[in-house]
Structure formats: C-alpha cells, structure tokens
Image (cartoon, rainbow, N blue to C red; front, side, top):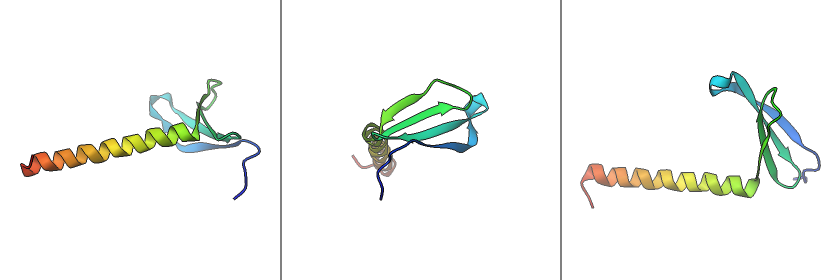
Length: 77
C-alpha cells in the first residue's frame, strides 16, 4: 500500500436524513477522516484511531446487549 499524500474525497450514494444532501467523506493526510454535507463548508474531522475506537465500542456494546437479551429470553441468570 502507499501512503496518503493528498486528500481523497467521495460522496455517498444516498442523501442523508432530512437534509436532502449527500455526505462528502474525505481521507486526509495525517490519518484524518473528514465529513461534511454537500454545499456546506462546515467540516467535521476526527482521527482514524478515534473513529475506530468508537466503532469498536459500539460493536462491543451491541454484542453485550445481544448476549444479555438472549440470557433474559432463556431465563438464565
């Protein structure tokens, strides 16, 4: 793989929520993920490490919730 030296931007296929605008996602040098709505200048940025940590936490929380729900339905615990 090659290192990222200049930003790469892509638009989502579908519009976002009630805004009727697509999201523009950019990968920027320095391992930064940036997102903004089309025709908007407000950009939200986060490091890829932070995004990965949040996503991993959501996955773990979902797995825990599923496990607890299964135990509750089976009457165990």
